[in-house]
View 1 (cartoon, rainbow, N blue to C red):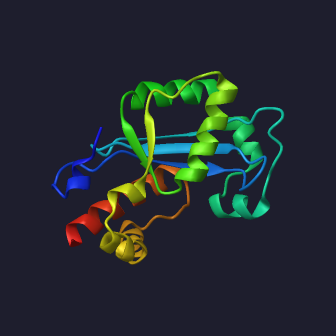
View 2 (cartoon, rainbow, N blue to C red):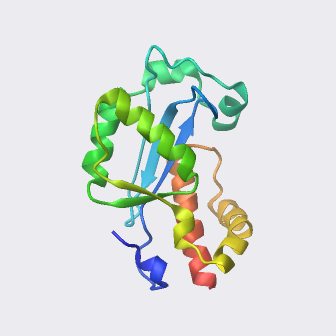
Length: 172
């Protein structure tokens, strides 16, 4: 699905996904996934780690505020998360601002669940002109302040990204 925003047409914004992880680099894994759809509906889930998912970065944990205990108590299985993602996102192209990381983490999630994504992950940058990209961080800060986001979590971050895209395109 191509986003009308890519062509500069005022319409519904594209779906956006965000993933929180145990850290960066080798051995990191997804711990929370969230998305927001064009109509504003959002979904988010903690992910219960697999037994061999041991990487844990305390700096990343302090940023997203998710503990390993929360993942064990409230996380859903990778298969359940993948099934929900496929049901809700089937046939869509969904955008991420950290495509390389999110692609890797989604791959790890779907591999362990023995599932195949029914949606396409694309880089949010593909929707931006050079002028849009130059304004991105300033506009994102303004949108974040306006939204009053209190936590760095997947669905809230996805909504922030989607609303920043809308604001950047409206300013153009």
